[in-house]
Amino acid sequence: MTTPAPTLRITQGFTFEAAHFLPRVPDTHRCRRMHGHSYKVELTLEGAVDPATGFVADFFDIEAVFAPLLARLDHYCLNDVEGLDNPTAENIAVWIWARVKPALPQLAGVRVYETPLSFAEYAGG
Ligand SMILES: Nc1nc2c(c(=O)[nH]1)N=C([C@H](O)[C@H](O)COP(=O)(O)OP(=O)(O)OP(=O)(O)O)CN2
Ligand SMILES: [Zn+2]
Image 1 (tube, rainbow, N blue to C red):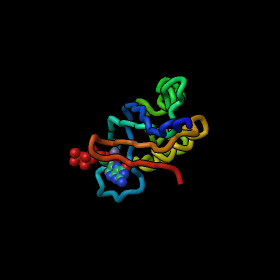
Image 2: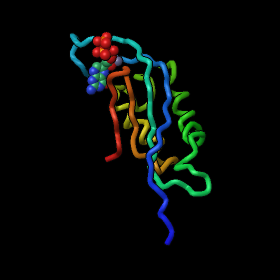
Image 3: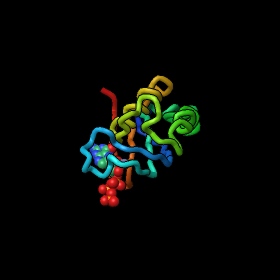
């Protein structure tokens, strides 16, 4: 009897700097004004460990898929990025999911940290 390959979650993190403002909060909300964050993104993949490689997926492949998206976000005003006119952490997470999932079907979650203590997480649906 063969032992089934274990299922694991792996996560690759990324950082980028960007400006944004939140156009749909009240005038009195400080995030209505242009400001910046040091964002962190975590892409989590879930799957069986390939017994040949020992990988769920190669971290390098995750980096390669995310690189063109990172290039669209880093040091830009996120409100100017197509599809991110209201760049909340939640909307950024959904935006990333929609663009990564087709290339990485094992994607199980996208986290977007606006600060070290606050993040939005999207797992599809
Ligand atoms: N659910 C959400 N709430 C808020 C979001 C969001 O994306 N989703 N975003 C913001 C603003 O972008 C805001 O800039 C958050 O960052 P910051 O002001 O730095 O937050 P802190 O409270 O941690 O800042 P301190 O200076 O440490 O108080 C607001 N809400
Ligand atoms: Zn902000």
